[in-house]
Each structure stands twice: as C-alpha cells, then as structure tokens.
Length: 331
Ligand code: ACO
Image (cartoon, rainbow, N blue to C red; front, top):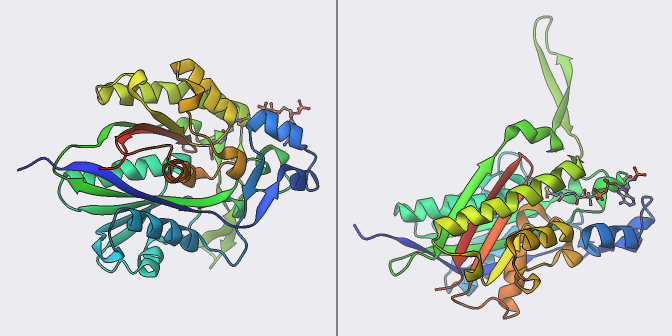
C-alpha cells in the first residue's frame, strides 16, 4: 500500500469584534497598561458577547480554511474541535458540522487546554496516515472569558476569545507533517485548573449526588512560567530531531500565545532569531486552543508564511500538557 502523507492546505480564523484594552481593565481591577504590557506583551483582548457562541466563531474559521484549501464542506470527512469551553458539555463539534453543512463528516471534541490544537492536529494526522479519512478540519477555539474570574487581576488580564482552523489532507507525494511529540503530567494538574465543584445533595435517605458548576480559572503563574520555559524548548528540539532537521532549518516558530516573555525566553534558549518567532498576543491575549491557528492564519494571509516554509508549533498548558508539531505549509 502506498504511504499517505499529510498536507496542511488551508487555514482560517475568527475573533469577536468587542475589544477590551489594558486601560479598560484598569477600571475593573487594580492593574495598569504598563504592568500588563511589560509582564505579558498583551495590549488588548477580543471578548465574546452572549450572542456569539463558540460554534459561531469555529464555523467562521473552518469555512475560511475549507475555502482556502479549495474544498467544499461536503468534501470533509472529519471535524476535530479542540476546546476547553464548549457551548455544550456533550460536545460542540457536531453543531459546527451542521452549521458548515459538512454532511459527510463525523465530528467530535477533544480537550487538552492550550495544547489542544497541536494534539488535535497530531490526532487528525493518524486518521489520515492510516487511510481512514482524507480531508480533516482541525479547529482550535476557546471562549475563556466565560470562565475567568473578572475580579482576579492575576488571571483576568491574560485571556481572550477566538477560533482558528486548518484543513489537513491526505497526499501521496510527500508527508508535510515532518515530526511531532506530545507529553502530559497530571501530577502538576493543580497549577492550572478550571475545576468542577459540587455540593452534596441527598436524593433519598441512602443516596447522594453532587451538583454544582465549574470554578473560575486558577493559575499558579510562576510555576506555569517555569514549566513553559523548561519544557517548550525541549519538546521543539525533540520534534525537530524526529523530523531529521536542525533548529536552523525552521523558517517560523508559532508557540501557544501565552506570554511574550515565554516566547522570548524560548527563542533565546533555542538560539532562534526573534524575527522567526510569530506573535500576535498583543492584539488577542491568550486564546488557549485558538492561539496557534489564529497566529498561523494571520501570518499566512499577510504573506509572511509562504508555501514550502517549515513551521514549528508548540502548545503547552493545563493538564499539564505540552507538545510540538513541525510541518511544511501548503502543498
Ligand atoms: N496588575 C498589577 N499587579 C499584578 C497583576 C496585575 N494584573 N497581577 C499580579 N500582580 C502583582 C502580584 O500581586 C504581585 O504583587 P506582590 O509582589 O505585591 O505580591 C506582583 O504583581 C508579582 O506577581 P507575580 O505573579 O509574581 O508576577 P509575574 O512576574 O510572575 O507575572 C504572570 C505574572 C504574567 C502571570 C507570569 O507568571 C506568567 O506569565 N506566567 C505564565 C502564565 C501562562 O503562560 N499561562 C498560560 C499558559 S496555560 C494556558 O494558556 C491556559
């Protein structure tokens, strides 16, 4: 049987129109534009109103990616939605399938926080390599503003909402997914969480259940910072090695957009010039699973990333989870 390779042939993105600046935030909590900019690089974040759903943003991003790939929604076999903030806990990917009109696709959600897009891309590639599916849409989307404690200045300044998507296709020529790695470590789960918390309710004399809701995002910022600057360079080096490349072969690096200081520290550790590090978190903040495909889409549409360029992506976040995928953009 002929080996099937992966081609990443389309991308798209969508963000809410509503924008909150650092100055706007300083009316809400005790912070300043100067503190946020110098510690994180973030200037603004786009926030979803109650009228805008995760499926709306995801559908827009996916439709653009399908169009760029020269396909129609009916050509799609599989839709993978990486998110931690579904509209429906039973899954949101099927709503996107219907909104797109992708009637021949199977659709499901996958959760790996800010590593979600990289993990979903790698998952999609397994279905393509085994010949099960040929045309897959991978979406990373999150509306973390729903789950942020807007009175907690240590977290609320960081996050924004958005969606990004790519189309992956089975191709017989070359495999453009050049290397990848994924890791998780549940021992550090408590450092970053969005935990369910219930209260005990008695149903009968002998039967109790718990009902409650999810608590706002909790983060030990310094621990996450240390984790990111240690693990991200390591995971990129491993994926580069698997791809039989060197760091110098990379044209572009797109890290999960969490903090400009993390991006700068990773570039320094890997001796990568800052011009190769793609960053748009000044405009969007940390959009979790959306951040990598959102940055990719902007860089492709602005002409920065060109067909044939080698792009290293790395996600990291809650779980804890982290991973990298290196691909050649386009056919
Ligand atoms: N405005 C003003 N002061 C603040 C703010 C704020 N928004 N937030 C915290 N401070 C204060 C603190 O209270 C503290 O004051 P104190 O010294 O009087 O106690 C001081 O600033 C320093 O606080 P630190 O938490 O030590 O600040 P640090 O320099 O570590 O920066 C930050 C915090 C930006 C969160 C940093 O730790 C970081 O980037 N961590 C990584 C976070 C991350 O990347 N998360 C996302 C990855 S996972 C995911 O995406 C879901």
